[in-house]
Image (cartoon, rainbow, N blue to C red; front, side):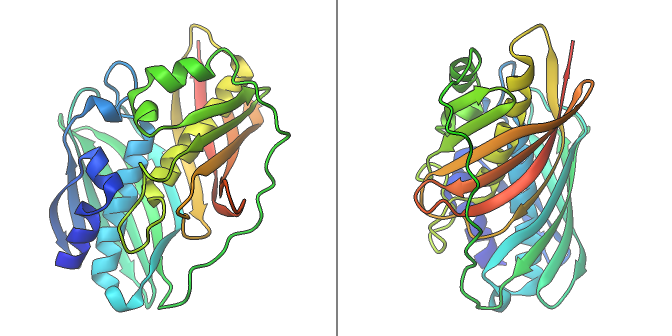
Length: 283
């Protein structure tokens, strides 16, 4: 358990967020994240990528403890999160509960609760141990059409959203229902053993790219918006290189946008994660 606690607290990305470990056991884990404006959207609302990150960290803490270090290295095979409400200018607690322990799989649910006692997100994850096998290499990225139009919103969002700014995310393209964002790995890497980008940071990038693809359809306006849900898979260990996320709004049902995203290394162009972001924009 001390090894797992160190895995959480020694991660550069976890430290950047300010994650604190309250407890870890064979049955689950509890984390606390004090409020920090650096993790927020304008107005103090916690960025959706932070909920996703807390869920991954909590689920890994629970699964790694239950499965044991000999089953590693570990990665998130499957991830689903629903955003229930918003935590604004307040701390958040993440409680991970191990639902089932297999030989090399840990099934975990994670609920994030605001300081006021309101559930703000609920996630289910499958954490997989590779049982000593070498890291997988993902498929080649499809990329995009190579546009370089950040649109009217790209530069504004990159500068005005504290969480996005602190992750170093650069907006290369945001037009016609498509987005392309680049995130540096050095400011977002995980533990020293893996050396690559933290899975939580990968999902935060994926969440942001999906949201920006939806905004690339509507453009700026007097709207209210939020991520409703996200389903993702981590196909390979995120590499020690900058990552690029390609987002595309593939379907719209009134105020609901379904946006597919893939995340790949900027050097090897191999996909390490993919998923669908369900985003809502209303007047």
